[in-house]
Length: 137
Image (cartoon, rainbow, N blue to C red; front, side, top):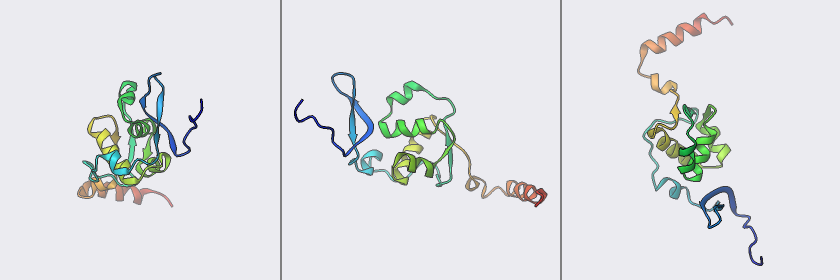
């Protein structure tokens, strides 16, 4: 067909199905604020080293997610950090944090605790220090 060349500025991810049931490519030109609805704050404290995983993968949920959230959900099937997700999906760190927070609020993604979670827990810090002292160098 004439005039139906693929746009080199489209991503491999897809969005809405066309009339044939195939997914149409989503443009890479979508602004980050459009992916997060303008939100920049998250419900969870997510550091770049925060690890994520999907405790119970749900294919129906994956199909219902927008492409960027779906890709994040799929990548988190194995334990992965926020920073690694940002690089793997070529999305800004802030977008990954907001989308991750949304998925965690749905119970779809588990956020593994970081040292930030234990910063006020002196007993935990003492246990860590004792464990480090017991290591042979």
